[in-house]
Image 1 (cartoon, rainbow over the protein chains, first blue to last red):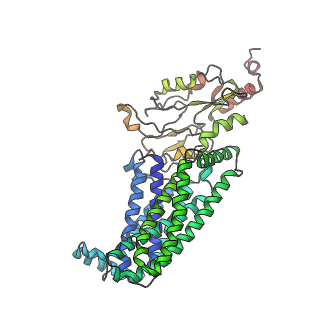
Image 2 (tube, one colour):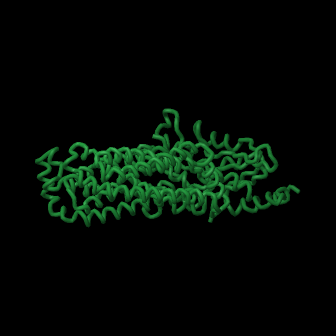
Image 3 (cartoon, rainbow over the protein chains, first blue to last red):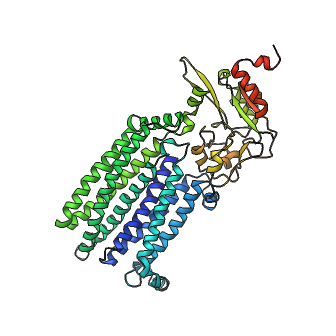
Length: 328
Length: 177
C-alpha cells in the first residue's frame, strides 16, 4: 500500500471506529429495542483492525513496528498516537463484549452458546455499567482523535500544522461512525421490517441531524482551511509550502479529487440526508435503503477528502532550498 | 567541545555534482537514493543559485524528537545518526525534517534488501550505507568540493572560513594574499 493510501485508510477507519463507538453509546441511550442495536456493536472492532492493518502495511518492518512504536512517548506524537490507538482498540473490544455477550440478547450465543455462556458470566456484572463505561470509552476515543491529529501537526508539514486538522478528524468520526452504525442497523431492519421499524426510526431520527450538523461543520472547516493556507504563516518557508499545497488542491494534481470530494462528500450527502429525513416518517424502509447509500456517499467523500489532505500536502523539506537561497 | 557542522557557501556552488558523487562512492550509497542533493533555484534566470541539501545535523533535531522508536540520536559531537537496526521505516522523521534529508530507499539490490524502506541520511561519513563500525568524522563532500563552497568540520573552525567566504576575502584569511 502506498504511503498516502495507507494514511488515508488508517485515519478514516480509526476515526470511523471512534465515531461508531460514540454512535453506539447514543443508541444505548435511546431506550428502544437493545437487541436490535446490539447488531451494530460488531462493526467497531473490524474498523479498528482495518486501520491498524493499513498503517502497518506501509511500515518497512511491520512486526517490529507493532512492538516498538510506543517507545518514545516522551517526545514523539507518533508514539503517543500509537499508544492511544492500542488503548482505544482494547476499550473497543471490551465495549463490544458488553453488547455481544449480554446474557439475554447478546448475539454471540448464535456463534457459540457455550463460549457465550462462559464469557456472559464474566460480563454480566459489568453490563449495567455499559452506558457510563461507553461514555468514558468515547471520551478516550475523542482524546485519541486529538492525539492522532497532533501527530500530523508538525513544523515540517506547515499545511497540516493548524487547528483544522483535529477538526477534520472529528467531522470524519461523526459522519462515518454514525452512518456506519446506521447502515448496519438498516440492513438488519430490511431483514425484519415489522419488528424493527420503531428502533431504526428512533436511531435515524438522531443520525440525520448528527450527519447534517457534521456536514455543515465540515464545510466551515474546509473553508477555514483554504483560507488559512492563503494567509500568513510562521515563516517564509511555511508560507511557501502552504501556498503550494493550496495550489495543488485548487489548480493542481488534486483538483479533480477535491471537486469530487465536494460533490460526493457534501452535495450528494446533503441531498441524501434530506431524503432520509423526509422518508423517515412516511416510509422507514425507503429511509433504510437511503441510509445505506448515504453511508457509501459519506465514506467515499471522506476517503477523497483525506486523499486531498495528504496528497496535496507540500512538506517544508521540498521548499527549503528556495528559502535558504533567498535568505543566506 | 567539538561540534561538527556542515555549512554551504551558496554563491560558490556550481552544481558540479562532486559532493553527490563522492558521497555515493565513499559511503557505498546504492542507486536510487542519495544522502546529498543539489537543487538549482531560479534555473536559467537572474539570481540562479545551487543549494546542496543534506542533513544539517541540527542543534535541536526535530527528527530525534519525532522518531517513535528512539532510533535517531544526536551524539555529543553534534552528529545526528540513525540506528538502522531500530528503524521501522515509518517515514515520520522525513515529515519532521525541515530539509527533507531522510530518504527511504526502495528497489535495492538483493544484498541490501534488509535496508529496503529504512531511513538513510548523511552521517558526516561516520556510517556508510551498510551499517557497520563507525569511521572518523570526515565529510567527504566538503573535502572534495571543487570550489570549497561546502564546509564540514568543527563549527569553531569552519565558521570564520564561512564568514570570510561570504565577505569575499577567503584568500586573505588563508594567507594567500
